[in-house]
Image 1 (cartoon, rainbow, N blue to C red):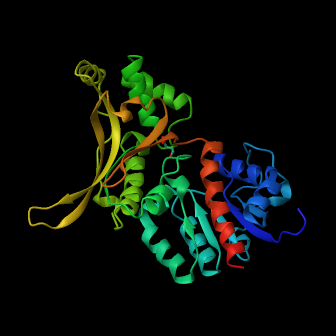
Image 2 (cartoon, helix red, strand yellow):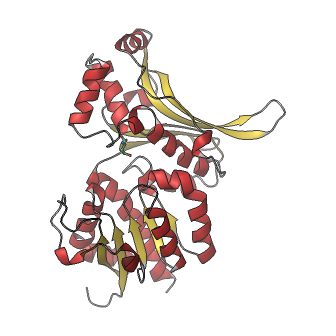
Image 3 (cartoon, protein in one colour):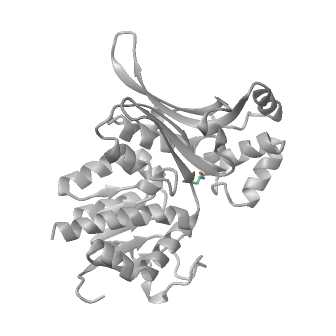
Length: 331
Ligand code: HSE
């Protein structure tokens, strides 16, 4: 659209989320430009292999294997590569060069969030990662901004969709653990390394991120007590059902007071018994939900798709628009 200046967006990674982000930027160009007050120009997409098959057909000239070069000169860098390196180094380079950064990288934020936040703060850049926890569900911004004036006491999350799918099948369809796991795997719900899901590592990373934001303190992932769902049997699921409860893999973060009066934060991931009347008990299939208890607001629940390419791309785009608007407001 005429009259808008261009903002250069560098996309790092073109997996299921990255391909949808690229598609939405290209397809919704005019609408996004009107919303931002500047045109989001997709400057390039850095990938490991130029020949890999993509979920979406995108202009071949956008692709490059030179992520470092692409990052230089970008106004906003969107990192969707996953994993700690080279994502961490590229984000630090982007921030040093004055770009805002959007990422969906839960492993990176859980392990290096404070380092990256410090680097962003030093240069006055924005680092946002709404998509790192619970996919499409807006939860990072509500905790960080909407509830910034409240006193959050507890956060309970079903933040891993594949384990919720497995436990839900065992509960509602009477599947054995093996059968439920096999179906989840066939549907592509599990991470490439399923241990990350079933042993609770993925949920623990998300618990770290939620706890750190909700309680304004650093909660290292090593400090999260973690138990997965591999020991859960059909008999336990049935016993819970008979007792009017359901087993869900929960990430729980809450304020605690030690006997000497010191305040702290407890964060844990484990298969918990939930009363069937609790709203989290109604979170079925691969869906996610985060239940927040705050002193003034009371109880809040955020529910929706915790994974999926286009769903997660929605959260990434929201962060991208927010970052891009800063460039317009700030001149
Ligand atoms: N493996 C994750 C899940 C993907 O099952 O929720 C989304 O982070």
